[in-house]
Length: 512
Ligand SMILES: Cc1cc2nc3c(=O)[nH]c(=O)nc-3n(C[C@H](O)[C@H](O)[C@H](O)COP(=O)(O)O)c2cc1C
Ligand code: SF4
Image (cartoon, rainbow, N blue to C red; front, side, top):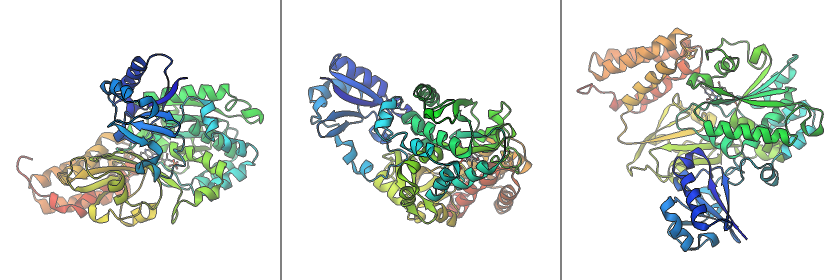
């Protein structure tokens, strides 16, 4: 009898050599000895390539494995969970994994992403089955009661958005999934799409039933070729299994779904630019109102939700809104997949209920900086997020608590920097990023961002530093108040936080 061995096919694992490890395993073990299953990643990226072996006592892990380790591992009894320096024990017993609260990512790293049988066995499509027996208004009510707020960054209550679309009168409505994931240090959307695509497909189908939309689109960034291929294959399997199409599971309800590939611009993650791009136009921000919920794709009522928001809907329907609502703190209900990156020893994805502190994520999970030096700052919420100093690492990760310190949780990407970071350069980078990615529609962002780069350059060159500082502050206010969308409106936040908490770095230096 062959032994089941699991190796991730996630892009983060394959970039570290998972394919080569899988090939080496097949070659060394011999045909028929192992049944190799390619899964998503568990998110313990510091252990990838991670090889898991099914034993009588559960899945035992070995990592990080290099192809050259394979013969030695087999000789040490890999197939029965034998002792070896790379043996980490049962993966589910690792404190890093065990302490997580995996609701949205419950199946990622466990199932074969393209096996509908695996998906069903692990509880998949239980949410859709419930939804098919419910009235649209009751589905919307369940999502509202769960307390789910948009995971794309703005944290807008998902149920309220859906209610607006449900109540709008139109001949056609759409469900669109924002899979542009342009924020620095974020990879939760990709990990979910590569590791458990049926969860997203199920969530979008439930959204369609909830608002009477018959067509869905997943807008995915071109930089995610593996996610695109996985989604397309999973959509095909869902059609073949009767979970998508004219008659979803014999209910008489229709939901069609396909993937659209963006050309790779940060601004195409902003929802109205995304809709423009989906319509085949240049990705440029639309003036609001009207809201996309009322006039969205092709002028029709449209749900725009992030991958994680939509992929969380199945568990809410399957286990009930109360179950989801029980996690979290204050108005931040449920869990968030935090993504830990940058100068960190143990990077990866950690799904925890809101309320966990930055310190716990950085030290208990992350193990401190990779360089071994003190962590001086973290940027959370992508390139437009504020820099948080070490003195605020005790802040609980909660939308309101972070707003209270002038920062944001956003999509949950956490990027760590040690004490060698030059915060003036990071502030300059925020303006520069905005200048490069600006869609150009409004002046405060288009002109202001380039002007900001120049002002920081002048400051660091020692040209009238007091005057430059005043100008930077004025410019930040103008951009915050006058920009049409969040790119120009939030780019000042990393700048302002760097000035506030790390003012000592903004000093003239030679050679600038
Ligand atoms: C410049 C900019 C970039 C954005 N990029 C993304 C993105 O990559 N993915 C995403 O889901 N939301 C992004 N958003 C937020 C979207 O505009 C929108 O709020 C979100 O897709 C709504 O889904 P949610 O309610 O499920 O979060 C971005 C916003 C701005 C201003
Ligand atoms: S703030 Fe920038 S990205 Fe947003 S609409 Fe204005 S120019 Fe475009």
